[in-house]
Length: 244
Image (cartoon, rainbow, N blue to C red; front, side, top):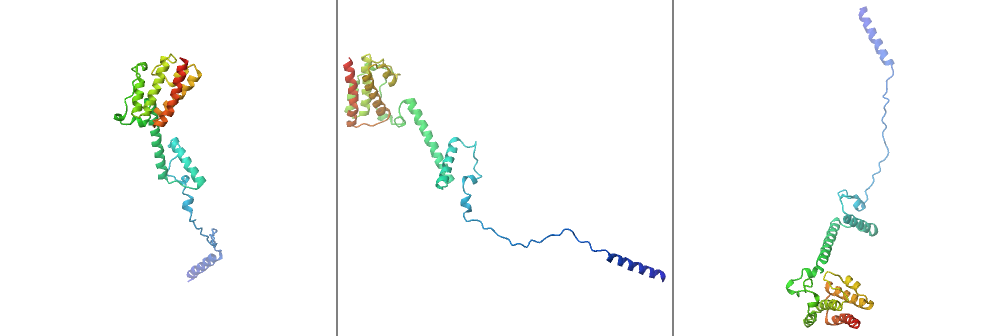
């Protein structure tokens, strides 16, 4: 009996001891945010604002672009900055291709002009419709009856060809009169340097200009313009006769 009372007494003491210690609280306290939320609305012009080339991350610029492409980009950027106009990438590519074609065409024209002395139009013209030119590289100009060729060209109203023959006739007369030393590889400038008389040199430079403009420039002459140009050739001939 005494042993049982002893156990009950120990149990009561342990219970009192456990209630005597204060309850330990958690030092980590989470505060609750009770402030109101403000929702920002996206602008309706957001797409237009970020639609420029600087926001296009699909386009690689720098060393991958050639000089012409960078120049075109600079031009379109200037149009956008000054006038507020954004050029469609497809339109920009089309314009770039057109510029390439024009440059290639200009290069072809230049090569043909340098190699043949004629422009591209005459180079691709139907050969059957062209009068066979004089091969002055094989036959000396003094042995050609240019007066007959001039008369035939005028009768056929081919005034442009007549101007060509008249210029060759001027070189022929200058060579016969020992004013120039004719050679088919010489240029108009070479002949001009050989002419010592100032007035004759001026007259020769004038007919050389007309010849280059009319013959190599594919300038078509009517009868009125032909006789207007012929006056310069007549002045050259008159001055040459006076010197003789």
